[in-house]
Length: 322
Ligand code: AVI
Image (cartoon, rainbow, N blue to C red; front, side, top):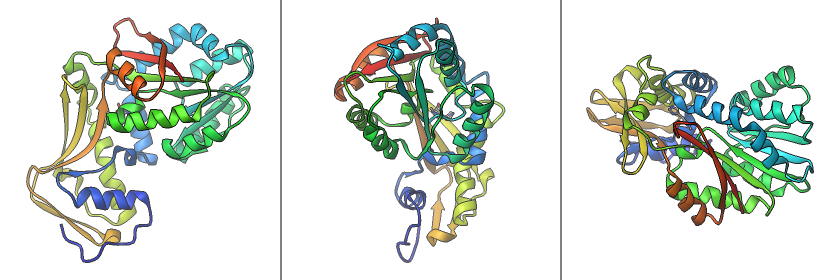
């Protein structure tokens, strides 16, 4: 790698790309997979048969909506339902519809890094469940937790579905949960979906589909660098590679350089050299079990109240409180 001067960064994305590609081993953050193309690819992933996570969580919400709704509603006072990383809200709509059907008073505050995802969610909800009062918040999880903490009045329930926290390493997940704990009061709840450890092959298949959708999703970060920073990555020069360690429960995604190559990124004034078979680590997708969840909760000053699971225990939704 060479660059004459450290450039002035115009965004966190630029800074993280610069830092990640000028270090060894190279890495990029999966939070930058998501633009309009990435959002669509992730929706396609969620619809793939191999990506069992979505269907399992969908079934859990469908089969346990009564119990979940009464936990949320508690004494019947209106509450605010925040959702971190709301995406297309497909699964959440099960709960929203049920809360509306039961005339439970609440307002819905979906949060996402992607304004595009929020706009689509708001438009679809206006058509499908117009009774829901919705107020979107755009930003990263960490930024918006501050807003949640400053919201006074109503009780809060924070949804964090889809094993989204699995994209953080344990220390970052604990830091994040501590921020969440600081944003809530004693009678507030956190409802968090976490993918479970299982047959390693099932996990590998979910992150390495034959149709190549996950590959395109992983490579979208390179497309974004090309589009937004004047990069000249040739996507065909990279392999999508997935590994899963059943001991730690960590699935890791890589982009592996198939050739020796030099890539230019104009707005960073950066030349990135990659050796043949050199890696760029892009994502972790952590898998859990009850012991690890208890440990995470304890480290973060939270308690596990209860959990809901699908029959095969592929996925669990945990209810946490302060
Ligand atoms: C958003 N997140 C929880 C997904 C996951 O399973 O880690 C993103 C994803 N990456 C590849 N496939 C799906």
